[in-house]
Length: 130
Image (cartoon, rainbow, N blue to C red; front, side):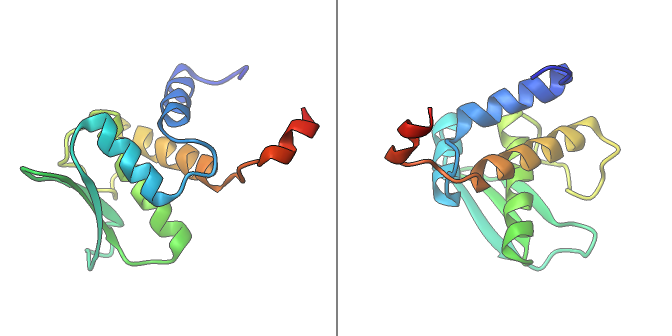
């Protein structure tokens, strides 16, 4: 993609390798778990109003804790936290402070991931369109 920054190109490549177009949330969590070698689970919880989500690493799993919200927003928050995991960030960041470059990268990751997941998969009829 012409004109893309190196960071954008790198994150887009990671997203594209992680899940197919139209992936479900379960497919996403399974793909991340396979990549990091440990389960990735999501839990809804009441969080401070300034925090949409947080990633917590425990001894046996990675947990993404999300403040309950509408389905689209929830998916974006999960995508952002998955970004932290895939990008190798530590789990001490809260999704409310965007002055940190890791937060900006995770936000970009989440945005690109949701766009990819929301695109419709083309079935066998797509061959006629090639």
